[in-house]
Length: 282
Ligand code: PDD
Image (tube, rainbow, N blue to C red):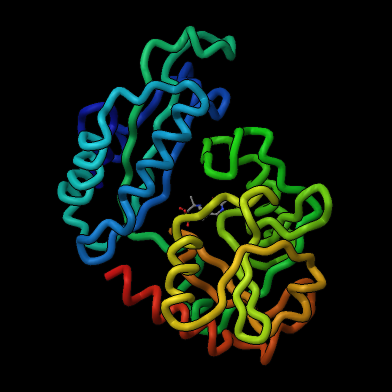
């Protein structure tokens, strides 16, 4: 496996960053999770716009044009002979001194990794997953906007730890007021009377690219699909629940905090939406 690291492709075992890299020391950097399907990099433009806007938002200068970065992504797939893969694109503030002041960093570091990856085991896409609500609240203090994706994932990791401790694959984050924001690494949709609802960014949900694609797919398939605020109660009494994300793709949720959702299997709307999603990614 070859990793893109600051202009070179290096073997996985040689792909190392300095202990003075501020991405490592402080999570000072931005990243994207992108997916290629049969050679087609899904919504690469949207991912790169989010990456560059996230970087600009934290005054991180990316030393590549968007065209050059596009080429890095495509080259990383090519050198690894991958047609379908998950791509992790990382831009860190780079090497500096031990202080947090970004001015000590002399140049951003660009890394691209491509490998076959799915967030959840394949069988869970058939059965659906059980999730719990996390006590950790969604806090976007690391960034300035729901559109920004930074390397600061401790909030998400604490939620993933709660899922692990509960013996389930994912957990939901509420915002400070108790409204449902999203999963540790994915967005959430509830379905009620054939209407799809997903939390707006101002609740603390990352404006996921998959989420936005699903809103389009749903409308094309004749569903009402809106951004809306809801609580755990609304999740418990929903007809269907599913999660979306680049790594997650679309996965049905069949139990939340011990409450069975719908018939306890991925519902017909979820399966219809998944079919629609599959048709636009290939
Ligand atoms: N995550 N919310 C959070 C907190 C996420 O980390 C992610 C993606 C999403 C879904 O966003 P998108 O549809 O743009 O991928 C929502 C990992 C990095 C991923 O799936 O690649």
